[in-house]
Amino acid sequence: MPQLQLVAKTIRRVRPALGLLCATSLLAFLTAVPAQAELAVASGSSVNGPSTASTTYSDWNYTLKAGETFDQAARELLRADISSYRLASYNGVSSSATLTSGDRIRIPVAWLRQQPEPARVTGVSGHAQRRPSGGAPLQPLSDGDRIRVGDTVITRDGTVTVELADGSIVRINPSSSVVFNRLTRYGRTGMTDTRMRLERGGLSNRVHPMIEEGARFEIETPSAIAAVRGTAFALQADNNGSHLQVTEGRVNFGQPGATRDIPAGYAASLGRTGTGELRIRQLPPAPDLAATPGTFNSLPGNVQWQANGSDSPRYQVDIIEADSGRWVRREQTSNNEVSLQGLANGDYRLEIASLAADGTQGMPASVPFQVDLSARAAELVEPGKGAALDTDRPRFSWRYQGENELARVEIAENPEFTNLVASSDWSSQDSATPSRSLGAGSYYWRVVTEAGGNSVATSETRTLTINGTLEPVRVLSANYVDRQVRIFWETIDQASSYLLQLSEDPSFEQVIKEATVNDTTAALRLIPGRRYFVRLRAVSDGPMAGRWGPGRELYVE
Image: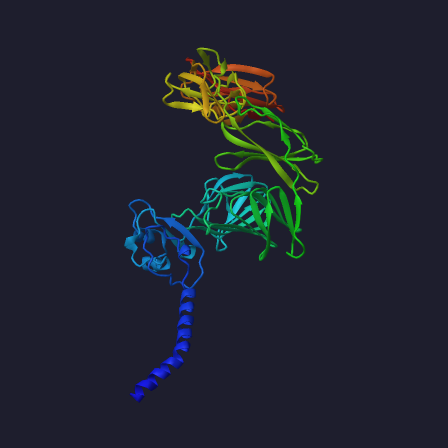
C-alpha cells in the first residue's frame, strides 16, 4: 500500500508537465497540417490527410472530364517520373477512385509533361536568315519554316512574323537578332513557356492572355527583362539600352529582381548596362482616323487621319494580315493619309501611330478592313478573230476592264482549254507573247484576268492559225576562184527554193542583188577589193514562212 501511495503522489506532481508537453506536440502537429481550403479538391471528393510534399510548387488546377478517371488524367498530364500515387498524395487523396468527373485537382507545373513546340514562320519580307542551334551555318528563312529551341532569327533589310504554339504573334523588325531560348508546351494543358533574347534591333508582340499560373512569356535584352501575361507591346535593344512601349495590358519590365509594371499608354527605358533609374514616360496619343470603309471593292483606297494634339510630323503605318498577324506593309510617312494598294483579297488591320522626336512609336489608331476585289473579263485586241499568222510566237494584246488586275494568255488546241499548249506569265501588262513557239496549225486563245489573288474572269475565245515558219538558213562555206565566189548552205526541210540577198552593209538596208535559187549552192561574181554580205531565206510552196539566216561576209582581193 505505501508503494501505491508513492506512485499516486508522483503522478500528481508530473501531470501538469505532461499536459503541457501533449499540448505543445498537438500544436506542432496542427501547424504542419495545411488548411483544407488549400487542397483544391472539389466537394464530394474524399480528403483523408494532408499533403506530404514539403516543396512549394506553382500549381495548375485541372478538372476531370466526363468519363475520365484520375489515373487516366495523371498518365496523360504528368512526367514519366511522377506517379499518380504521388499526385494523389499531393492532393491529400487516399484513394484516387473516390474522384469523379467534375472534381478538381492541383498539379504542380514542374510535374507536368513538357515537350518542345517549334514556332512557325508565317511571313518573311526582304532578307532574313536562321542560325540553327549548335552553330550550324546560316540558312535563308522562308514562309512555313519552323523555329526550334536555340535557333536565332537574323533580319537584314526585311521583317519576319512568327506564330508561337499558343497563337501569340512575334513580329521582328529589320536589322534585328532574336534567340529563341525556350519554346515549351505543357502536354495538353494549353500552357506554354516562351523565353527569347533580343540581342539587337526590335520586335512587336501580341501575346495571348495567360490564364494559367504556370504559363510564361519573357523577353530578355542585354540590360533588361520584359515579362507579360497577355498584352501588346514593342521592345527594342540598341547601344543606348532597352526600350519598351506598351499599347495593351501591362508588362513587367526592368532589371531582373527590380522590375516594375508598365501599363498601356506608357514607355520605359533602361540604360545599356542596366544601371540607372528606369525612365517611364507617356506615349504620344493615337491619331484620329477618319471614317474608313469596312470593305474596299476597288483599289487604291485612301485612309486619312488627324494628329490628335501631337506635334509629330511623322507617322508609323502598319498594314497587318488579320489571320497570320504578319506585316504586309510597314512604312513611315509625314503625310496624313495612306494609299491602300497592291493588296490581295482578305482581312487586314491598319495601325497608325505618331512618332515622337526620338522615334518612339505612340499609341496606335487601329481599324480592321477587308479587301474584296472582283476580276472583270478583258477585251481582246490582237490578233483579230480567225487571224492567220506567219510567226510562231505572236504577240497578244487586250484591254483591262477592272483595276489592279493581272492577266495571262492561254492557248489550247480545243475550245474547252483542257490541255494548254502555251501560256504567258501573270503580269499587269496589257500584252504578252506565249512561253513557247507554236507549231503550224489551228489554236484557240483567251485572256484570264485575276484580282485580289482569288477572283478570276475569262475573256471571249478567239481562233488563230499559225502558218508556221521554216528554219533560218545558215551558209556553210564559201570557195573563192579568181573574182568568183561559190557559196554553199544547209538544206531546210519543206523548202522548195531559197531567196538570196547580196548587200554591201551587214544590215542589208540596201540590197544590190536578190535571186531565187532552187539549189543549195550559188556562184557570185564580185568586184575585187570590196566587202559584201550574203544571206538566205527558205521559201515554201505552202503557208509556212521562212526566216532570214545570219549574214556571211565575202571578200575578193
